[in-house]
Length: 307
Image 1 (cartoon, helix red, strand yellow):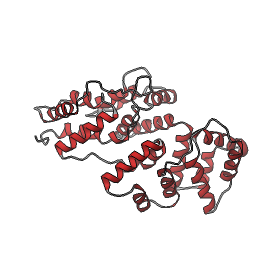
Image 2 (cartoon, rainbow, N blue to C red; image 1 turned 90 degrees about the horizontal axis):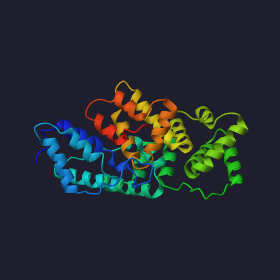
Image 3 (cartoon, one colour; image 1 turned 180 degrees about the vertical axis):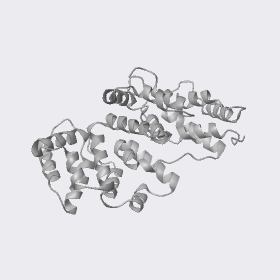
Image 4 (tube, rainbow, N blue to C red; image 1 turned 60 degrees about the horizontal axis):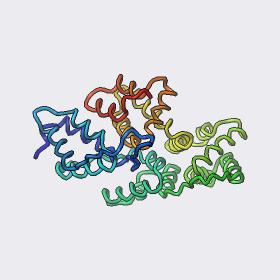
């Protein structure tokens, strides 16, 4: 069966499928996600539905949206593989969001992502990081790819907190940069938040101001992003969505990636942070800005509740 007769429908399908690998496994009643496992799931039936929706007389957008926004991450992965086998089309990569992926995935999920990366591209992610980056950015990405961030034990280590604050107060030299990399990539978010607060009390300025003074270019952007993620991950993604919506043309790649990847993790929290900061619900912002083939799909992923 050919799918060439429906380029618009195929484009919509691939746009959503391209971000499927970014979603977390969690999908259960009572979580903060907006998607649950589809109980009457059949990968063959869903692929048939998609192919029929794309190859018919007119593209059936409603069927495409219904299938791809009402399946769990694992179910959509099965659909993605089967769809690619049937159509011989490969889904897109997310190389431009390496920092986001490495910094926001739990260690088991991160190892799975790296294993898939090696399988798909026949190269270790670390090798590509060394080839495509340099300096502090490279050090940050390599450290994050190890998945060695400490988990919070519930015990506050005041000595380590003081040591980290002192290390971050020092400026200049490669040894200083290595300390920033170690602290930002190894410490738990709970510990880092306390370090950030203590740093402000000791110096009278936010840590982000020190980053802007001491680092430039990719290193500065990476450290600022990591600080934002550690402070409030949901707010970090709310800011990314808002920025994507402020472009002259909405950035569908960012919108799709974030909504798909966080739909089973913390999208409700992201929506709450979005409304709190920008005074308007994410759903309403999408509804008033996004147009075209992705409109219904993005709205369906967000869900139409008041948050």
